Figure 1 (cartoon, rainbow, N blue to C red):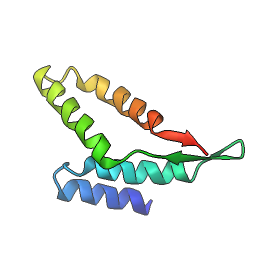
Figure 2 (figure 1 turned 90 degrees about the horizontal axis):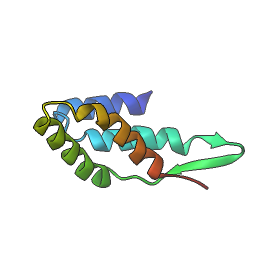
Figure 3 (figure 1 turned 60 degrees about the vertical axis):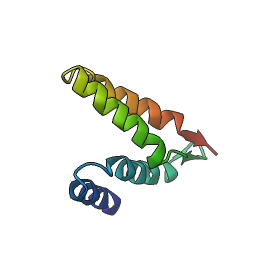
Figure 4 (figure 1 turned 180 degrees about the vertical axis):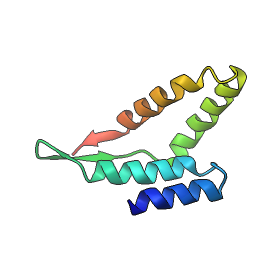
Length: 87
């Protein structure tokens, strides 16, 4: 809960610019503390890697007058899965 609150405040104080960092911080904690069938998961994503995607998705949402924003959630989940491994 503490990581979520910290991520929220970081996002608010930076006007959303550091949202990728907050997302990686919170999601990384969740994944790094998850065990499935005795195997621990590990999150390898970085805020720098997500930031480029985040800017691209923002621009596409602006260009398409918000229509692309429906796909942002799907793209974000896809990015999370690609950066999660089983140890």
